[in-house]
Image (cartoon, rainbow, N blue to C red; front, side, top):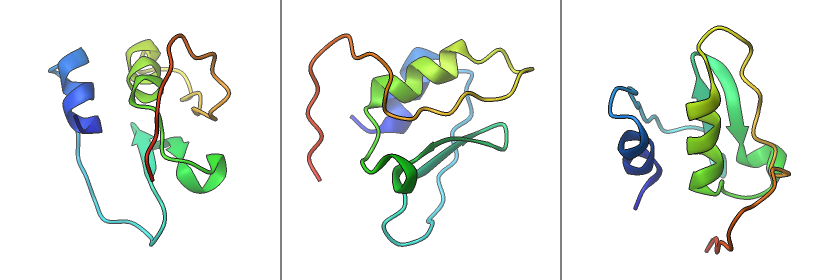
Length: 80
């Protein structure tokens, strides 16, 4: 599955837009605020990290960036 599908499966009301960015980058913004940056974390995101962060966001506070240190509840494999 791709990240867009995972996000919309969690909440069909979330509008997901994709754009081509800088070479080697992968960034996710939420309401114009940086949620995840592959350049900062050093890897592609685990989809659950992104989906969980989006579901926790209340739309009013600052976005808490996903930095890759969130406690993982299951094993995951990222293939680059």
